[in-house]
Amino acid sequence: MRLVLTWLINAAALFAVPYLMHSVNVTSVGAALVAALVLGLVNTLIRPVLLLLTLPVTMLSLGLFILVINGFLFWAVAQMVDGFHVDSFWSAMGGAILYSVISWALSTLLLKNADGNS
Image 1 (cartoon, rainbow, N blue to C red):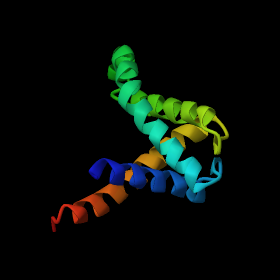
Image 2 (cartoon, rainbow, N blue to C red):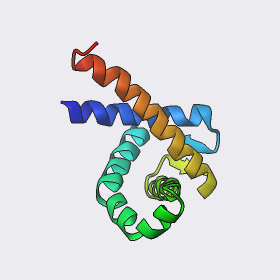
Image 3 (cartoon, rainbow, N blue to C red):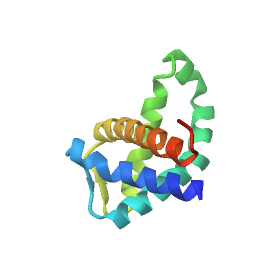
């Protein structure tokens, strides 16, 4: 149940990003659900490999290169999913940061209350 709730929170965060950033577009709730699912799969399967391959650059940049990786994956998912569009790579970097902050805030609020913690 927690996995489904996390997926719905991520879809809601993805659906909220276009309201704050006009260079990201999500056409429907269904597109947000599919894009959130694909983003979750990409972040679970591909992101660790990219982090390992780019470890030297990430260390030299004091971890800031992770923002580039996140933006690239956000942009790549937008290329794969119909109904989810990002104007440019730089927009994808900003959208990925905004998406992360919104999903973190929503999950902190909702999952903390769902667990019964105060």
